[in-house]
Image (cartoon, rainbow, N blue to C red; front, side):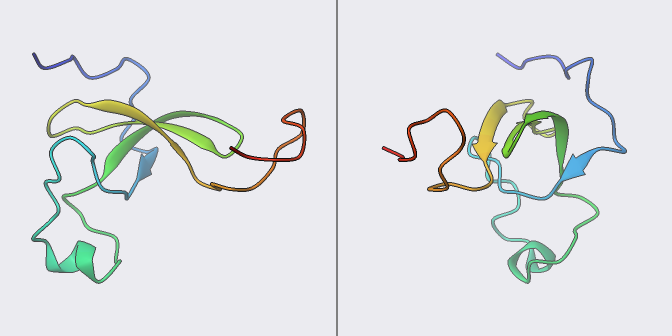
Length: 81
């Protein structure tokens, strides 16, 4: 079942990361070269510090991504599990 595009989605707020559901950029030379692709971007819905909340416009999958994995944040006891 496809989800609707989130009402917070705004084309002006985008991120260029792989979608874990559809992997639509897997064969894109532009994405493989880590350049900004005009086709394979994700909606950046919101963030909570380094954790970004994204939605793929191709398959509408929503997920969160920690952009600083392994970095301790205030209130987590100074360690990561």
